[in-house]
Image 1 (cartoon, rainbow, N blue to C red):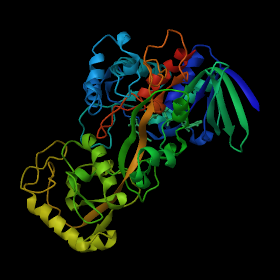
Image 2 (cartoon, rainbow, N blue to C red; image 1 turned 45 degrees about the vertical axis):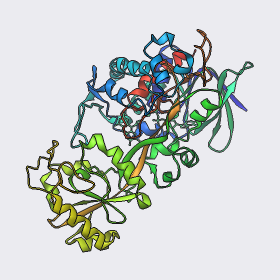
Image 3 (cartoon, helix red, strand yellow; image 1 turned 180 degrees about the horizontal axis):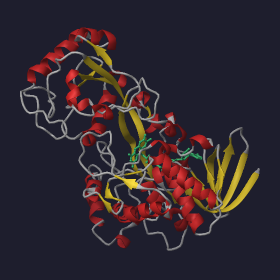
Image 4 (cartoon, protein in one colour; image 1 turned 45 degrees about the horizontal axis):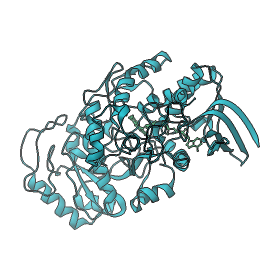
Length: 489
Ligand SMILES: Cc1cc2nc3c(=O)[nH]c(=O)nc-3n(C[C@H](O)[C@H](O)[C@H](O)COP(=O)(O)OP(=O)(O)OC[C@H]3O[C@@H](n4cnc5c(N)ncnc54)[C@H](O)[C@@H]3O)c2cc1C
C-alpha cells in the first residue's frame, strides 16, 4: 500500500477543509488534503454557493444572529438537561455537552469568531459586500464574498498550494487508521481506479460535508420522501457521508437533525446549479391535484421558503406548480428570483395551462376561482409585507394576494432539492468531536475519538425542521475549519 506521512490529513476540499489546511500550514504543519472530486469540480457545496452570510458587515454579525440560533434550539428539549446549561460551561456534565441540541457555547463561538474569520479571509484576498440577492423580500441582513464560494475555493486552494500542501484529487477517504491504543492516526483512502493509500498523520480533520449524495443514508434518515429529492447543485453528489459514518463508528456523538436538510424550491426540468424558483409569494401554488395546500406568503420569502418547500415535498409526486399571471410584471426585477434556465409554461387560458402542465382542468379552474373570489382590493406593495391577504379562504394567503386573471398565465413546476443535510458529529467549540454518551468531561489533553471535524460534517444543532440558518453553512465551516487542526494536535 502507498503510504504518506504528514502532520495533518484533511478530508474534504470545501471551505471547511481548505480553512483547516491553510490554518495548519500557517502553523508550519505538513498537510495532505484528500478530495473525492477531480480538481475541476473540487470544493463540494462550497464551489456552488453564493455564500450569503447572516451579517451586517464583515465586522458584525446580523442583529438576530444569536437569537435566531436560540429560537431554533430544538423542539421539546428535556428541561432537566436545559437547566444544566445555566451553569458555567466548564461545569456542564459530559452528557449535556455531548447532547445533540444547539449548544450555546458553539453559538457564542460562531458569533464571536465570525468577524475575525472574515478578517482572516480578507487578509487572503477575499472581499465581502452586501449584494442584491434572489430573495426579493428579506427578514435580516446578509453579505457575501465577491465571487461567492467558488472564489473561496480558488483563493484558499492557491494559498494551500503556495504553502506546500499536498492536494490529492480523486482520492476518497474510506476509514480512520488507528494507533495501537485505538486513537485516530490517519486515513485509509482509495484513488480513482481502486488503489489503496494510507495517510498517517498526527491529526485528522474530517471536513467532507454531509450525506446529500448518498441515497442509502438519505432513505435511512430522511425516509421515503427522499425519493423525490436531489442535491441542489453538483457538489452535493460528492458528499456521501463517510466522515460522519467514520466519526460515529469511532464513538463520536451525533448532533443535529438527521431527518432533515436545507430544502430549496427548484425547477426539476433544469440542470443548472441551484435552479431556484422564489416568485411563488406573488402567485399561488397548486399540487398535482390542482389544489392549494399552503399559505404562499405568510412572511418574507427568506423566512418561509424552506417550510413551503417541505410542504411541496409532501404533495403527491413531490411536485407543485407556481401559477402567476401577467401582472407579475408589476414586481420590478422579479426574474431575479427565478434561476431556472427553463421558460415558464405560458398559456392564454387556464384550460390551456392545464393541458400543458397536466394539471386536472376542472380542479384548477375551481381552485383559481375560489382564490380569486377571496382576494380583496388593496394596495399591492411587492417589497414589503403589504397585508393584502385573502378573506375566508383555507389555506389563506396572507400577503400579495391578487386575483390570477390577467392573461397570459405562467406556470413553473417546483420540486424540493437538498442543499445540505443537518445531521453531523457533535463537536466542542474547538471543533473536536465529543464522545457519544460522555458522562464526564474529557481529561485535559486527551484525544477525541476523531481528531477534528468541521463544516457540514459536524452540526451545532438539533433543530426544528422549518428553520434553516443555524446549520453549518459557508461562513461557519470556515470558523470551524480554522481551529480544527490546531485543536487536534
Ligand atoms: C447551491 C448552494 C447554495 C448555498 N447557499 C448558501 C448560502 O447562501 N449561505 C451559506 O452560508 N451556505 C450556503 N450553502 C451551504 C454551504 O455551501 C455549505 O454549508 C458549505 O459550503 C459547506 O462547506 P464544507 O466545507 O463543510 O462542505 P463542502 O463544501 O460540501 O465540501 C466537502 C468536500 O468533501 C469532499 N468529500 C466528501 N466525501 C469525501 C471523502 N470520503 N473523501 C474525500 N473527499 C470527500 C467533497 O468532494 C467536497 O469537496 C449553499 C449550498 C449550496 C449547494
